[in-house]
Amino acid sequence: MEFLNYGFMKNALLAVLIITPLFGILGTMIVNNRMAFFSDALGHSALTGMAIGVLLGFSGTGVPMLLFALAFALLLTYMKRKSTASTDTLISVFSSLGTAIGLVVLSRGGNFSKYSALLVGDILSITAKEILYLLGALVLTLVFWLVFFNRLHAVSVNQSLAKSKGISVRLIEDLFAMLIAVIVMLSIRWVGILIINALLILPAAASANISSNMREYHLFSVILSVASGVLGLVLSYYLNAAAGPTIVIVSAVFFLVTLLAKPFFAE
Image (tube, rainbow, N blue to C red; front, side, top):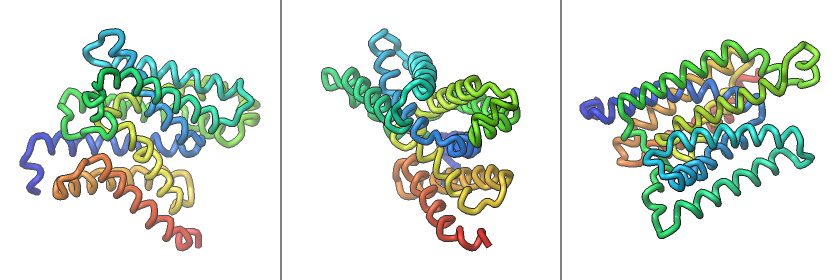
């Protein structure tokens, strides 16, 4: 494998092998809880988080982005519970506003070019230290999945029934929103604002097409996510193209193939 002769490709491959199972697991929970728009809005809010960091004089904007994303996630869940507007409408408003504020601040004086790489990400630039951050994010997601999955699934199926079983719906929703915020902000630099939601949703959606039970749903999502990541990374090297968008294209192809194959798995 020629591409493994380069250190940056080895780091990128290792990062893909960590981040794709992470997205495969998290994506199933996002799809189950109908939060695809939510994760997309969080991705776009990264621009505002970055803008706040720039205004406050931070040389690195990771901490402001993460803090803003956590506040943004909790505000969205609060508004979703209190507002009479539809959830999709509410999230679209917040997403558009967050994106616009970030663009206005970051583009002052024509300086947005310094931050444009955040839009599509650059997994080839990841370092060994940053890979450890992703590994920590994977462990965090696995722990959350093991501890809270049954309760989260109950909330997604029927909130009234979940409450009758003694499950704190508000706490579960807030914890899950915060988990999504942390994962999105930790990975967005290498994945990209414009495509992170596709990488979260496509493997889970493809898995849903061919799964007959919950175990298969999670397993196939992880397998399809890893396969998309590795194949997309290798293709991007030989095509001399951006890795993130190439991975999304592969994921979309898998989704279309599973969609066509769905009738055979339903039998």
